[in-house]
Length: 125
Image: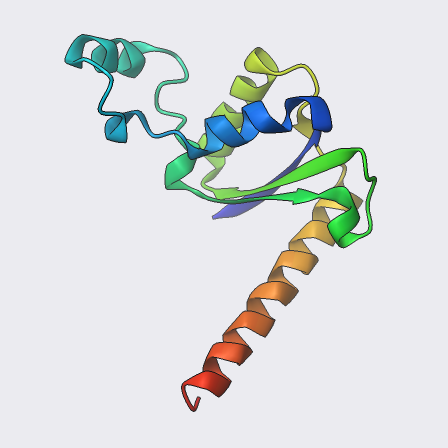
C-alpha cells in the first residue's frame, strides 16, 4: 500500500468529505439501473469509503490554516484514479509536495503509535 497526501481548500472540503464517505453499494436510494450506470462510469470504481483515509486541518499539524489535507492509503492504481477524479471534479485539490506529505505521514503514524500504546496500557499489553 502506498500513501498520498492531497491539499484541499476550505471551500471544497465539505464536498470532499461527502465524496470520501459515499459508497454507492450502501446507498438504498439508488435503483439497480442507477447503480449499473455508476459501475460503467470512468470513476465508478473509485470508492474512497473502502480505503484508509483521514482529512486534517492544516493547523492540526503545523500547516496552513486555510487548507485541509487528505491522507489516503491505497494501492498505486487506486491512487492514480483518485488523482484523476479529483482533477476532474474539484478545482483546488492537488497532490501535496513531498515535504508536506512526509510531515502528515509522520503525524498520523505518531498518532497511531500513541493510540496503540494507550490500548496496550488499557488491556495490560
